[in-house]
Length: 272
Image (tube, rainbow, N blue to C red; front, top):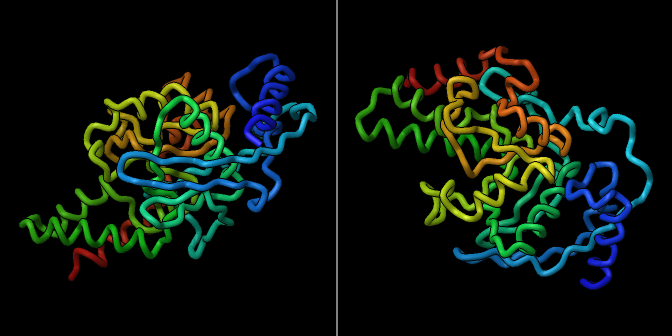
């Protein structure tokens, strides 16, 4: 099977002029059931046993991004998800015995990225992907309460927490469009100095992912630098964003919005 997969990949490369970027319109994994991926995770490594890929050779559409506008959805404190939003999900692996899921429209690209990293000898751990809003709420409240216990005022604790954890319903994890790699490992505070981060920096855009919260951009994104947090935006968009150095907010031209969700949640916590 691996020999056949390699031969298919070689044919696709030839057909695409040896390009190392795989356009969305040329990569299809027909169904979740057609992908056989086994992830055995320890604190040291993720082993992907096999990935079965199905390719089509039809010509790319004239403007591939027309089909990937959904991947540019801005999700932040001023642009929350619709109440009750739950994406269609697909399984992408596991971490410490827990399943990891992603938006089904982009799950293919996570699998391709993981396989490419493994082929290059790089171990990427799926420490977080899709996260239910209820779980987001728990994470926020736990961090907030920890800071209050440490002596911070409730107002200051909320402000500090919101810099580290998105308010429920305003997280890209709640949309199933973001992955945290190798977070909560021994590289938690030094991930941007690892081979894994270097590989993502140089290659993630080929699979449609961007570093969502870059260093020095907190005043725009509202979130502190997170070298482990990578967001799917589509291959063409990712290449443009990487080349421009823009944040997603700047790229889509939306730096405002309605902060009523955050305001209501803040009032709920600090008024107790």
